[in-house]
Amino acid sequence: MTQEVFGLRYEFVYRHGHLMELFKEGGLEASELSNLQVRMLEANQIPRLLPLDIHEVDSNIRLLYRLSSKRMLSHVLKVENFSIRLLAKLMYAIVCTLDESKNYMLSEMNFVLKDNFIFIGQDWSDVYLTYAPLNIAHDVDESYLTIDALLHKLILYLGEEEQVQLQTWMSTHLARKSFHAYKEALLKLMDEPILKRETITTPHSEPIVALVSELGLPQAHWKRDEAKHIQPKTENPILSKTEQMSLSFIPLQQRGRWMTIAFILILLAYLWQQYFGNPSISLLQIIAGTTLLLGDVGFVLLFLGRPDFSSRTIQNQKSSSIAHNIYVPGNEVMLDDATRATDPLDIQSYYQNLTLHTTLLSPSHSNATVFLGKSPKQVQVGPRLERQVEGVSQSVPINREVFTIGRGDSSSKIDYVVDDVGVSRIHAEIVQTSTGFQLRDAGSTNGTFLNEFPLITYQGYPLKDGDIVRIIRQELTFRL
Image (cartoon, rainbow, N blue to C red; front, side):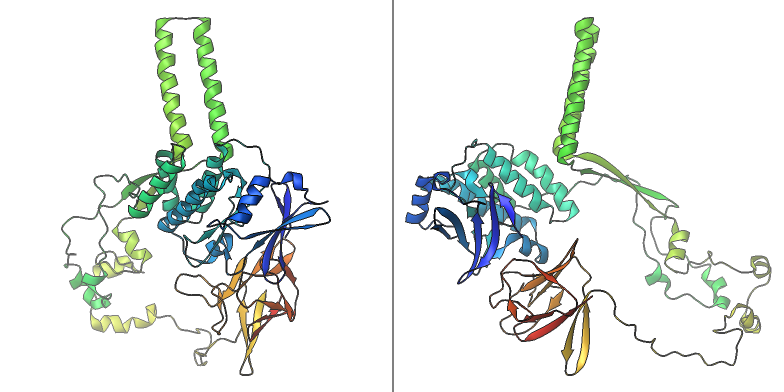
């Protein structure tokens, strides 16, 4: 798990505690660090920053960040419930940290605003950011692009409707690029709920009223003639077919936005070239109107997204009742409609003809005994965890790409719960990769063991068939 940030490689290690190490192949030189920022970090205990230690051995400098009792944001988002209010709370703490950093002569662009470099404590506002004291040439406005990129990524962890709402909210409330404006907008987002997306519905659409509560269970065949005279108690007649149209917007990806801008600019350049080649008042009016129209279309596509018209057809009362097996008087299906329409049914004729519409369980062997017991237990296949409980083997299938293990609570979505003393809420996870499965410790307090070998936090270890994963006192055998 070695990647790069700011041209530095990073990995997770264990040296008297869990650490994240930033280093450079061949050694990080002292001239690449900012002396002012290093002195400010050493002289002040800056809030919401990961504790940093700078180690230098033989002119080889390494940056070590202490991660004890902190959880990586990318791991927490996978298992805990996330909402718009929590997102606003998290982003407000991050923006406040960036705004207050200038009081300590720090640079906003030296913060690593990525979900796997942001750590949180017990609360979503208890944020710890990674700061690299490097000499980096940058523009002040670039920090807002980084904040927006992080916000766009966090929005993806919300529901589809909330994503559309926040995309519209960002285009209107975060248009002014300043830390003060961002903090005001995020405070309002925490205190005031976003208005729900408006849905355009045809004025004649009426909800379908279920008839089960009024009609009860389907009646016997000899009583259906009487039921034909019973009308459902409803004030408005149910239409045979009703259509509801809803308008929503699907945000464009970065590539789609650039293509939209390029297409509009090329089209405008072509139109104005026609005007300059043959200028006239009428042509000027047409091209000016077209320019305004294309500007509006471009604004909608860039800030709201592509319109999505979805049509939902509600079937009539008959098809709905058939789909849900609801009996509606007058709509029954007969095998011999002509005969039953002419001859009224009574209880005597019903039982005389009962064999004509009764299905036997085994027509070829009428005297055979039908087994109604439980089906044979199927053998568990595929990746799984096995454990022994009082001599009985239990199997837990691994049916997700990120399979989480821990104590869990009401706000955590844990795939396998280990209810032992000392188990963290999110203790470990098994991740499916292109090369197989990996086991990772998710920042637990008491650690995770693979074949009695302690794991380094957030470091991936390959799993093979028969490996034993130990969490506190519980041992789990990994099987493929």
